[in-house]
Every structure is written in structure tokens, then in C-alpha cells.
Image (cartoon, rainbow, N blue to C red; front, side, top):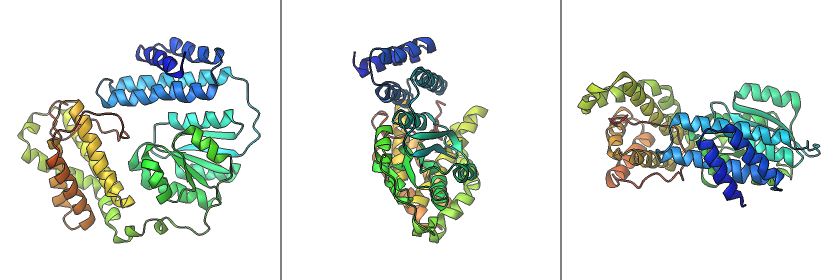
Length: 365
């Protein structure tokens, strides 16, 4: 039986919310001689990727995604506890998620692969506040920090965390979808290394990471922040959401019939758009925002909602930010792309999920 066959069996168990069957699939694979690292990454990890793809394609609810993830997390624990303890002989690594990052399973898989390979691991879990992480580094003195983030809007926080870790003397290896294709944002934000997956992270950490740069400041990595656009837009994000929501009520009469839940979700989705815009201004990469909108259009298509519902929000946001040239140019470019491609292909799951669920004007919410 191949790892894919076992992943299919695990998917069936997870889909049925049968934790006991899921555990039997995983432990049975190890008993049959499958390498535990392979079980972690090509069975459990493969199923978790499928969970995201099924949600994106509107075949799995948010509650279903949470239930599946919870079972996968417990199955990882069952697998780890069933194995003989590996005596640590290699470097000490602190594995943590960026503050605000709740998707902890990718980081957990990295931590367990490192343990299997003999590293001394401190696994700190989801959303670790930067100040507490730095206190931990001073107390324990790890040789490296493995920092995980799946959501791009956490990149400003990730940057501050990377800089703080380096000031504490700990080099950083970053991983997760938030850091962009080929880890472009990880390197831009000053991380010593980037890894696309747990195996690559373990391979890279087998050799000591370069020592952090002394006296380095976050602004050194992103000189465009001197124009203050990111600072001003992020500080007024709540006011922007309120102004755009009010404008949408004037433009879209159907919003008058929204339920309270639909109104709340529309406001949340506007906040997501503003968050991704401010992150793109921080990073200085227009592709981050246009990629988010393309992903969102795919999500809408899978839910039979036309992508054009995004256009009024972008136009209103551009009007509010008319005095900010970088933001205005980014919004105008994005609106032009959506205008010329109103019916994108269904979601493929190939883009990282930014967690937006509903969009302004999407009356099916």
C-alpha cells in the first residue's frame, strides 16, 4: 500500500469524523514498516492539504475544516507517543507560529520531523506573542528559531519577530504560505533561511544557520516604508472599513435586506481586503494584493458568486485613499484586472487561504 493509499484511507476516516479509525490508519502504517517521517508528511500532511483544498472548493464547511484539523492534530500525538524516544544529539531549535497565526499543524509537523532526526526541540505552538518568544529565547538559548505563518497579513508581525529574534542572537528559518512563492518574503524580511516543507527545514538545519546581523533594524529591509503610507493606512483601517461599508450600502440596494449576520460578515470581509492592502504596502509587492484578490475571486466562483462584487469595494477604497499614490495605484490595477476577468476558473486550492469567507454584495452569504 502506497502513502497515497493510506492518505486516502485517512481522508475517509477524517471525513467521517472517526478519530479511532484515523488513529488505526496511522499506527497501522508504522506497524507495516512505513517510515514515521513519511507518515507525518505524506499521509497526515497530505490529508491536511486536502482539507484546505476541499474548503476552498466549497465542499467542506469551516466547522468541517476545524473538525478535520483537530483529528489530524490528535493523530499526530498518537503517532509520536507510539514511537521510541529519539535521543537528541543535534542543535536546539525553537519552533513557533507568528503571533496571530492559529494554523499550528504545519509547525507541529516541522517540530516532530526535527525530533525524529535528533534535534532538541521546543515546540511553542500557535500564535506566540513576540515578547514571550524573546523571553523564551533568552532563557533557553536555542541555536535557531523555526518561524511559521500561513496567512500573509501576519507578515509585518513576522518581520518584527524575525528582527527581535536576531537581536536576541538567534538566527531564523521561516516557512509557511505567508512567506510567498520560493520564500521571497522570508528573505526580504531578513530571515537567515527559508524552507518549503518540514523535510527541507530539517535538511537546512543540519548545518548551522548564519549568525544574525548586529545592529540590524527592520527599516533596513524595507526602505519604502519611509513614505509612511503603510503606517497611515494601517492606523486608519477601522475608519476605512466603516467608510467603505457605508458607501456600499448606497451603491448596493440589496444590502438593505441583509441579516445581521450578513452585515457582520461583509464588514469582516472588508477588513480582510484592507488588511491585505496594508500588508502589500508594507512588503512593497503589488502581487501580494492582486494574488489575494485572484484567490478571493476563485473562492467566489466556487460559491457561484461573480467576482464583480469586489469592484465597488475597491473603487470606494481607492476614493478614500486618493492621497496615497502607492495604495491608489494598487487598487486601480486590481480593479482593472477584475474588470477584464469577471468569471475566473473555480478554486484549485493552489493559493494560500487568506481566511476570508464572504464578500461585499455576495447575497448568498
